[in-house]
Image (cartoon, rainbow, N blue to C red; front, top):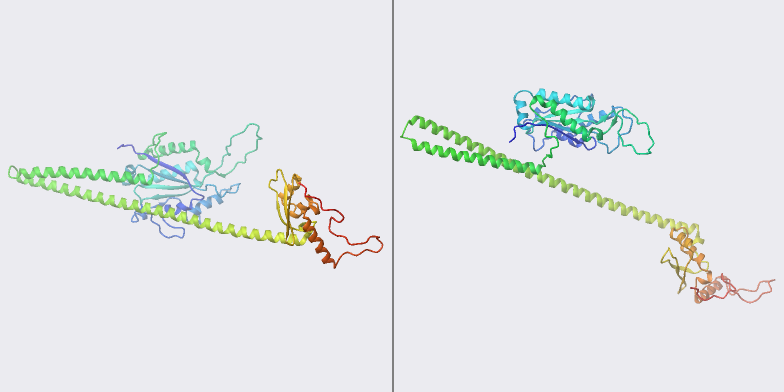
Length: 458
C-alpha cells in the first residue's frame, strides 16, 4: 500500500439550487426532522458542524443559496435550468485525516479549508460549509453559488457584428466549472493542504471515483484478506504454544508458563480481531443489500410514477381530441346553417360521396342520389388549383362538384326524371301557360331546362 496521503477536492454541479442534497448534508429534512443516512453513525452526528453563519432570517442551506442569488445584483433573470449551486467535497486520505483529528489539528484544517474556499470562489459565494464527523473519514461539504463578475467569454465568428458585453455579476456555473479552472483548483487546494501532510493526486491520472458496488467489492476483499491473515497468525501462535508445552519439565517451568500465557493471550486477541472483522463484513453485506433494495425500490417507484403520468397524459389527450372533434362537428353544423348554399348541388340531387385519388394529378369521382336512384361519374384532369382548394378545406364537396360538373352531369337520366317529378309535385301540378308569353304546354323548371341530358363525358 502506498504511504502517499492525498488531498481530495471534488466539485459537482447541483440540480437547480441543490435542495435535494440539503437533507443529507444538514442531517435534517426540509421540515426540520432529524435525518440519519445509513452510512452515518448517529452517536457521532452531534460532532458535525456548520462552519458558515447564515444571514438573518435564513434557516438552512437551500435558503442560503437563494438569498445569495437575490442579493447579488444580477442583471439577467435566472433561468429555470441554470445551476444555482456547486457542491464541493473536501477531505484527504483516511489515514492522514484520522491523524489530523488525533493530533488536535482539525480546527486548523477546517480554517485552512474555509480560507481556500473564500479566496478561490469569493467570500459571499461560499454560503454553506458543513463538517461531517459521523462517517468513516472526516470531510467537508461546501456549497458555492457560481456568481462571477468578468465578461462572458464567447467564440468570435468571422464577419459577425461585435456587440458590447455587459459587465457585472452574473450566474455562470460554466465559468466556475471550466476544465482549466478545475485543474487550478486541484493545484491551489493541494498547496493549502501541504502543511497537513496531504498532497495533490497525479496530474492526468485516469483514476475515477468508485461506484458503490465497486467500493463494497473492494471492502469485502479487504475483510477476507485480513481474516485470512489473522487465521494464519492464530495457526502460527498455536504451533508456538504446542512447542512450549513440549518443553514443560525440560527447563525453567515458570518461564515456560509465562510464555504459554502470553501465547494464549495473543491467540485470544487474534480471535477477537477475527470475530470483529467477521461482524463488520456481515454488517457491510447487510448494508449493501439494503442499498441495493433501496435503489431497486427507488427505480421501480420512478417507473410506476412515469407510467402513471403517461396514462394520465394519454387520457388528457383523448379527452382533448374528443373535445376538438365535438367542436369541429359543431362548427360544421353552424356553417351549414349559416351558408346553406355551400352544401347544395345545383342539380338538386344529394351528394353521397366525393373521391380525388391523387391531388397532384387530380380527377374527380362523384356519387349522387335522388330517392333510391344512385349515380356515379368520373371527370378526369380537373383544375389543379380547384383540387388544392378542396384539399385545404377552402371549398366544400358540393362547391367542388358544382364547379367541375354541369347540373345535368351530376345526375343520370333516371335521376333527372325523378327530380322533374318531384318538382311537379312540389308546385301543385304541371306548369300552366303564362299570359302574354305566346307559349303553351308544360315544361321543366330544372336547371337544364330546354337542354337534352348529354351522354356522360370522360
